[in-house]
Image 1 (cartoon, one colour):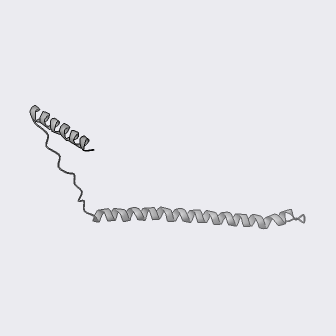
Image 2 (cartoon, rainbow, N blue to C red; image 1 turned 90 degrees about the vertical axis):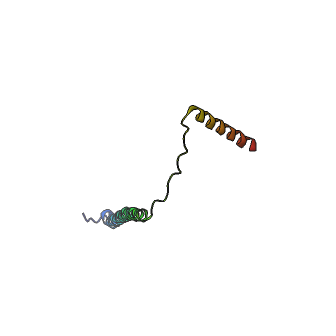
Length: 91
């Protein structure tokens, strides 16, 4: 492979440099992926731990009572309409 033509001898150092650079980039990408994966895993663990400590204090407000008879339903509907009219006039 070594010839006196100079073509192969001058290409050999460039080729080894390219291979070294390529391997360096491969190692960097692998390291970044490794760090990213375990960073994501650690953040999920941390969030799970924080959610475990925090007691759930959020509760929904009690549901309004529904009218049971037809007359009560009509009265509730009239009250809602009157409230909507008042709100509309206030604007």
